[in-house]
Amino acid sequence: MTKFQIDIDFSSVDLASLETEEDFQREAKILLPQALFKVGETVGEKTWEELNKSLKEPGMKQKSSQSEKRRFIQETGRTYQRKASSREKQELEEYIIEQLRIHQKQ
Image 1 (spheres, rainbow, N blue to C red):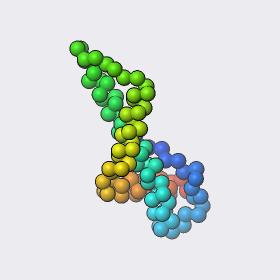
Image 2: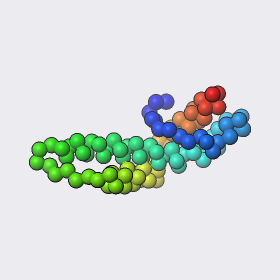
Image 3: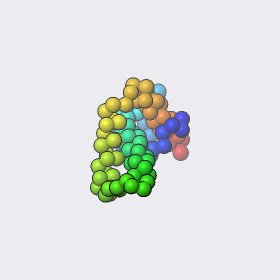
Image 4: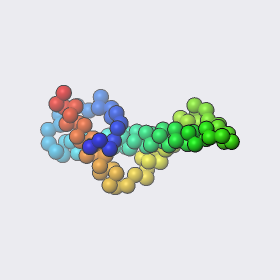
């Protein structure tokens, strides 16, 4: 599943203890909020870049500081985390399970 291009922090996961499908699902549910936030931040960053491209057109005033950018990206991450659809959450959970399996084999 290449829809998600995020880095998930697996440092707190005991990969060796993941044996059954239920183990993987349980761990994916624990990691899901963090992953949702990261997906939202990625969307926010792309949106910020697109907005700034359109503001660079002649006659448009560009007003953006790094703190405004960071605030926008974080807020987009929190909003996505809260409002993601059940389908998006399920797809991301499946992606996390896939990544857990990959990291476990390494």
